[in-house]
Amino acid sequence: MFRIGREWLSLPTRMFVSVAPIATPHRLPHRASRGLSGIVNVGGTLYPCMSLAALLGIDDSEGEAATHRHTFARLLLTQWEDQAYALPVADLHGILRYASASVQAPAATINKGLSRFLTGVITHDDMRIGMLDEALIGYQLARTLR
Figure 1 (cartoon, rainbow, N blue to C red):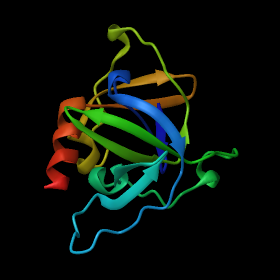
Figure 2: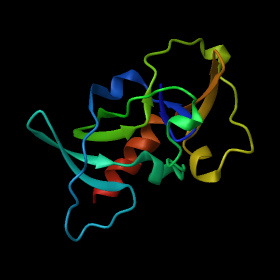
Figure 3: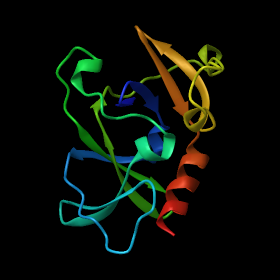
């Protein structure tokens, strides 16, 4: 589970390679794709840095004030098919196991950009976590690089 802006989201753990400290992306010349922030160097390897906030239409300008606690931004290093990506997130909660019976339908009030990528919503403590569709997110990330 991770947070972007005020939204708590999740992806299947099989997509994740590792977690890295936040890094400033270096812009790529002549590339103005929405969602592609640039490239980041993590441990000597270059990763395309993709903004899930831009792809999903989430306002990520709200920082620690949104959660009323101190947080540490991170880069989630993910893999979809044969391509690796770095995804900056505002906060990282960890891995959550859940029963498939606890998955609820997304609320109708969720913004359209985000709702089309959700397969459901789960509740954990006082958080409602949007479950992102792995195939749709992976396809969108790959499409952004073209």
